[in-house]
Amino acid sequence: MTKLTILSTEIRQDADGRYCLNDCHKAAVAAGHDYKSTQVEHFTRNASTEGLIQELLKNGELECEPVSSKAGRYGGTYAVKELVYAYAMWISPAFHLKVIRAFDAMVTKGVHIEHPLSIDLNDPAFLRSTLLTYTEKVIALEAEKAEAAPKLEVFERLANSKGRTNLREVGKELQIGSKRGIEFLREIKWTFRDQAGRWKAYSGAVDAGYVEMKYTTYTNSAGEEVSTQQVFVTPKGMTRLAHRLGMQ
Image: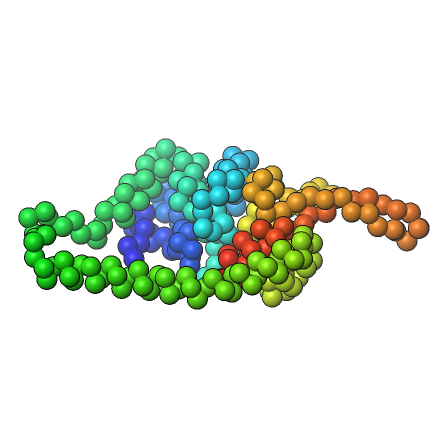
């Protein structure tokens, strides 16, 4: 796989193909930009960035979440290409241009363009070889799809039978633990805490049909009925999370 390099800084990618914004930050600093003011955390908390993330979620074309933070020594914040462009533009027009050119170079580097004269469509051996190559790829992809389908179908049936899932149960259903499940929803920008510390849902995740805000009623220690709003993950959301975590 051809790797993205910005000003001699290699930009790491995660398993979903997202790019490490921390590496982009290193490249920006190498280009002469201020270290503190260009830190990734300032960019991700920016209102414009939040808006772009919500638009990407609404679009529904991405196979993964737009941005994800990974803890640990080799962790960092990984984001899709659109957010890398936005981060570069947020830093400066000059750095934005360098990132655009870096992506262009990555796309063209190592791509072999066959000269028309070197292809003989009347050559049976060439045609057989080409057909065999593509047939093998199709068979391999179909096999992967067939293997994954039953697992995902079972999870979809389970999610639909249970209906909405509250935040504490999400991690248990996904077998990653209740605490990690709640944190994961925050990382992928489905939920956030308001100023009072209550969990709320981002509008983009609600519009996408992944989560819902519902009122629930309970009796407090004084015997009074209290109505409060809670976040629930929909069956569609649970299936998306399972897919995201590789349970398919």
